[in-house]
Length: 63
Image (cartoon, rainbow, N blue to C red; front, side, top):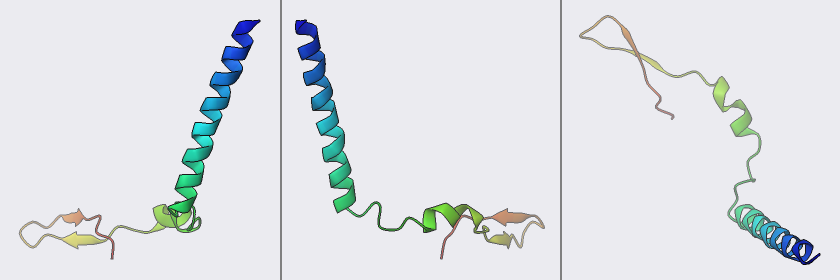
């Protein structure tokens, strides 16, 4: 029976840890912009041609 008390106390401590991490992340603004990350993959990468070679080079520069 005493193992139940140990497991309940450990689970409460873990739950408090996750709750504190959630509150800290909300206060730092990680959930302020929920729209842009969902469409970021739809933006095309800019393709620049290398003048020495005639093959296009993809860049990941964001403007």
